[in-house]
Image (cartoon, rainbow, N blue to C red; front, side, top):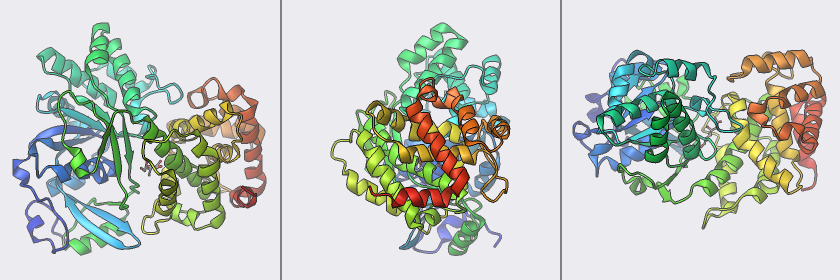
Length: 494
Ligand code: CS2
């Protein structure tokens, strides 16, 4: 199969495959997206695809800040790609057309900055993962000694980081008298709008104090809660989808039926009517965000570390083990739920029931290894915030502590059978060194890791009500392995 999916072959796709119902040539760019990964293409780009039929001003120019891979796949396809929605009911295919142009930032820096500074660009969305904000995960403040931030401050006209690109584009707009765009972060950070605003303001202030005040006063950064499970695309996905299309798609994305997007409605420069595509606009995202980060992502990370250690390749495989699914139910019901202030009208019981089913979706091969990545950046908002709330209320944290301990065991870089683990984390080198020095002692390892204040903050490491249960859980993981530790905890009466 040599022919590719593109603007020409689109018309000949088999019936039953949805395709853009609007004239792509009439679409103009209104959004610049930074971080064109699978998640963006299965989430925001789909909501936008839905509304372009009514309002063609919101086409997306999407940039990758590092690798040219997505550009290489999508540029020959005129930005088109297939969205595959999979569940036990089968697979539905739809071609998405909302991304009009892809830019590889390192080799087209000026083109990206010019597009961001263009008055037609009214929103800059981001999915750059937790580490892309170059912040300190424990405090949310800009990490001013981050090498890429140091680089960007010295070379603001050719930045490397997402905050650097945004600040330089805002500077150019300000110079030209063009109002700022709205910055819409779609990453799983706590109070993500406030976090990105803090980072941008500080960076701008380091450029020039008056500019910092301008960013603080004039740039709107609504918080969002984003949710859709989007595993990395496999070659098997590519082949299956290519067969169904009758033409090759170099980079389709595969996801689940569920999708949710809750957004604070603060867009002084205008916005698409994403609510027509199912997004919810609210005044305050925080209750939704806590519900999602703590229940979904907290469980995900716990399952990823424990499941990987137990030898399970995917979340669905892990959940098929009854002890692991009982552990996650216990974690959600007993330890997370009491910390939540529910969004108005939310039905927590059915939300949690649906989560369990989503985790069990056998059609998604979501690797535990993928979710295990970047734990040092994820733990604070996924598990540690919940733990802080529990400790304040003097409540037990057994399952949460096991999740943290499983991360510690995982980052040693050696699995339970002695095989190496490919640990991906901005702190990987440091974590490995600390683990090597601890030499297999749970107590030494946990003590060394608790000292990472960018993860645990100043409060948790010195609190025996936190360090005690985590160290005890780590001891059990070393002594009995993950599967037995989980089975023992799960069999206890709730
Ligand atoms: C996952 C998330 O990779 C991970 O860390 O927990 O990407 C998760 O699938 C999404 O947040 C679901 O909305």
